[in-house]
Image (cartoon, rainbow, N blue to C red; front, side):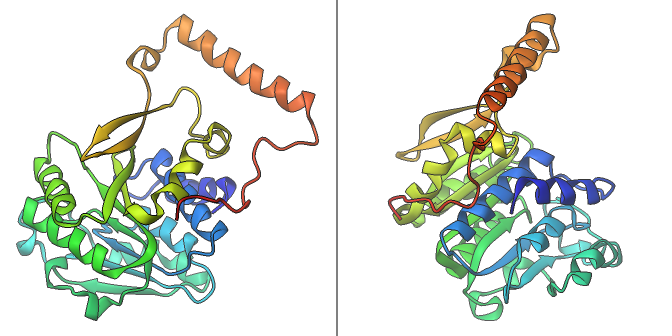
Length: 285
């Protein structure tokens, strides 16, 4: 998905109640574009869609014969053990009408995701977003379902991986990585953690480490990327340094300088784009 398309979906969904930042939307759109550039096809799935704020974006990622499927308890809140989210089916369906108008069909599973199986939902998903139950066993079951349903070079996006309010998700992540040695965490930011199989991680990491690509998806300055060891592999962490979070005169000057530098560089080479979105990426996968 191109950055302009992501911005369009963010604007369209800004009044929908939910927990999905514009930066997270850009990250998802970027992953989608990497997959399209590398001929990675498949459906998209989301567990815990609430009112459809992020599901709307996933619907925009769908192309060709691909499909979108979602799972949420909606009115079955008696099964919401961790009390994470409180979706409404009627509100979700209303918010998703614009996606349906574009020809994308949405398959809805109104049930506890623990009752789902790969046999039931299929095994052809290239992008699997998990934002369901936040207790350890709930999140772990969702991770196992995603892994069993993912295409070889697909991506799992996990919500709330390291939030102090939801330690169960962190426990589930560590248990999943212990039990699935072919997967690794590759990127975390904006309250989302991305996992892929180790065999294809290089395909995504090469793009994530390219500053030009990050800036194209509005994830450049003041954001920084660092890598630190996590579960025996280097995890890329995208964040804003503490000293840049304050709206001080010095930080305002830094932002103006950065934007001016990018503008001057663009004017200096008017015929050369900052980055070519759509160029095939070569990686270890």
